[in-house]
Length: 446
Ligand code: AMP
Ligand code: MG
Image (cartoon, rainbow, N blue to C red; front, side, top):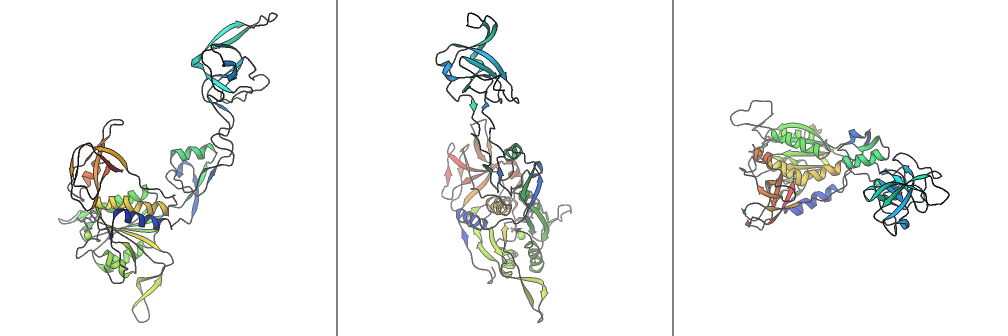
């Protein structure tokens, strides 16, 4: 590493993740825009969403049946006179349709509870009958309902405002719009929502052997798949990918492209961060007065991963020269974070998920969330080496609650075919040489 770079070392996975989280906590988006509700899917709310009325706006029947007074059913079976019916969407007229002593009103799910009622009996526990009113003078036919089961006061209806009251904050800014968030926005009449502008994330691949995907690779060349997998991961994390192509393993051109990338909100580099003679990324970033927070993590795949920032200080522009003909140093107003991800395609994908994703989510305005692992039982025994925490492509299978997981067969961190067959990463702690079939193991879904 260049002497201009501040020194940083190799840290544990947990330290690396915490460092990213700490820096991510200090960034935020600056601009917002208004979009149609459905166009907001996957975007991040820049405004809080308030209840525009009580939820529910009235005591809402939760079952089809009869609105009753619970006290009338203290002894069952009981017979109540049916004095009306309320459908969903109709406001019950309290004069014509209220529940008095010994009375019931037919009610449908979603309808407002009529006056006088304090519970709903499910239709399954009732039988409708014809009958004659009890008074000796009145012999007109009436409808009655025979009820087999009692109810408690408040049963089978949702009281007004029990879910939310008018003016209550339902969704805070920073929530990413998924179907549930969209349902809430829709229910309060927000056909347009304010969302944050997506962060622009530069993606720069490096390596003399890497060619663009529509080129025919020479015998020793490979196509630039990393720029595409990263661009897809950036979109998935809520960012907008700006692909800068491929930088050769040559410091001058690499530096120009890195400077271009630092104009975006975040720079992702792939390749060139290992110990090889032509791994120039850290050196060039060092020349640009980068500050490094870590230059490796004790993980596999992805050990050489680098995290740092440039700017908010002096950043040399390679094109600019001062009067003496030496490079001018132009201040860069904003601090720009970068990740140097190892070039092996699976390492690139894994280190993105572990470290770059939370930074993009923060730049997109999302409220920070913890990395959460699932657990499943191991299908067949594993033997590994100790020292590094491993995130290995794995297949979670089984039916319903009987999930089990096994490692995908793979040829190492270049094996994208194995990763495509996998549906998760199995997390193997650094101190385990052998894990037996049937043990619980942690997983990170992908
Ligand atoms: P590096 O990290 O530069 O040492 O690269 C490690 C491995 O990843 C090498 O086999 C590279 O050829 C491969 N690689 C580097 N960059 C890319 C890329 N953009 N797309 C696909 N493979 C790559
Ligand atoms: Mg390389």
